[in-house]
Length: 219
Image 1 (cartoon, rainbow, N blue to C red):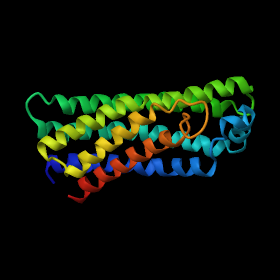
Image 2 (tube, rainbow, N blue to C red):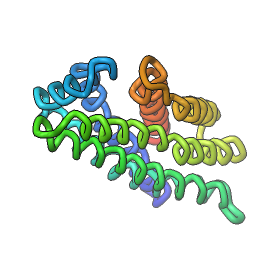
Image 3 (cartoon, rainbow, N blue to C red):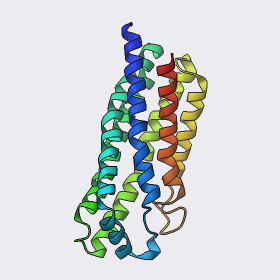
């Protein structure tokens, strides 16, 4: 196996690892959904206290995947794109830096949520509400570095054909979904920080990573 093949295998495995770690987190979110804002912070605290272990497991896996394994993927993707881009390699570098920034931003979101879960049920409703909102808004802000990293990757893919063109199109769709999700700042409903679009954004990113993993490991 050549060094290039090893890089692609490691990058594909990192993408796949991030996806695998994300799946149980999505399952936990479906099984124990966040109560609507209209239900009050008391309902939120009660839900967190009742399923505290499940949420702690979910946050641990999220941190391991999005702020751990994703960094390995970022380095591997940079190596693949940089080799194909040549010259200054500016777009591959942008993709790497923005992916690292995405990982750091996600970790901030996880940190706020972990503090809330850690204190439940011994936390007052006002503090719980602030931490929950802060975590939700922090999650929305991850959209910007995420969009930059996948757009930069799409540019290199389109210019060099280092990966199939459908991955470039998928990356642009991921960017659009993330940028739209960042506008979800209504106080309640589908366009609240825990509404429809903010839920679709990580799903779209995960699906794109699964596509990258499929291509790299298959070839």
